[in-house]
Image 1: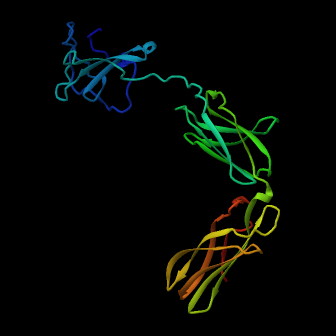
Image 2: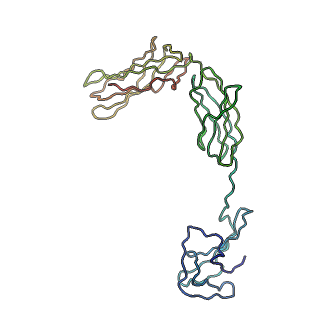
Image 3: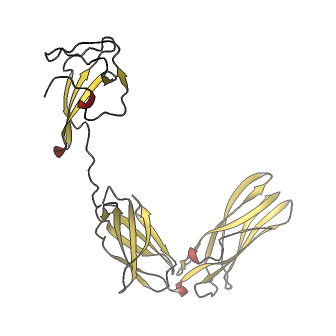
Length: 294
C-alpha cells in the first residue's frame, strides 16, 4: 500500500460521523514517506485521516488510517494498517425463501385459521391466496414480515377451501408454500350469541344479572351451551370485574347471575366464549357480544 498521505480529492469516501477541521498553521511537505504533513488549507478528519481502496468484488475495502495530532497537525506516519470488513457494499435485494409447513384449521362455519413457518429473513410481507376446492386461487389478505398466522373469516358453511402462502419483498415473490385445506362447519353444527340483556336489579345493593340467548347457524335455539362471560362496572366509585357463567335451557336462554354489588352505578356483561358438547362456537356470527344495563 502507498504510505503517502492523501487529502482533498484523494479521499474516496468520507464517513459522515466524523467532524472536519482546517489546519491552523503553515506546514511543509517532505519528500520522504512518513515525514510529510498536510498543507494549511487541507480539510482533514478529527484525529484520524482515512483513505479507502475498493475491493468490492470480494465484499470489503482496504483501509489505511493515519493519525493527525491536535497540537502540531503533523503527519505521524503510517499509524494503523487495516484490512477488514470495514464497510460492506450494498448488495441487491434477493427474493425471499418460500414459507413452509402451512396448515389450515376450520374453527367455525365461517372461519378458517392458517399458520406457517417463516423460512426467510428478508421478506416484507406474506400474501395469502385461497380458492374453493377445484377453483382458481386469488389473494385474500397479507400480513407483515415475521407474522406466521392469518384468520380467514366470512366464509361459507360446509365448504372446503384450499390455501397457499408466499413471501414477498421489493425483489419479487417467493415460491409458494405447500397447499393446505380445511372444510368449514355446517350451520347446524355452529352456534353464536343472538342477544344479551344485562340488568341491575335493586339499589343500593345491586343484583347483577344477564340474560343470554344462544342459537345455531340456522337460528334454532341451542340447549346445553355454557355461556362464559364477565361483569364489569363502577361500584362505590371504583371499577370492578367479575366472571360468571350459566347454561342455556331448551329455549336457548341462559340467565347469568353475577352476585350482588353495593352502589353499582354502571354494569356491563360481555360473553367471553361458548362451549357445547357437539357444537362449535362461531364468534363471527354473534349479533352482539356485550350489553350495558340502563
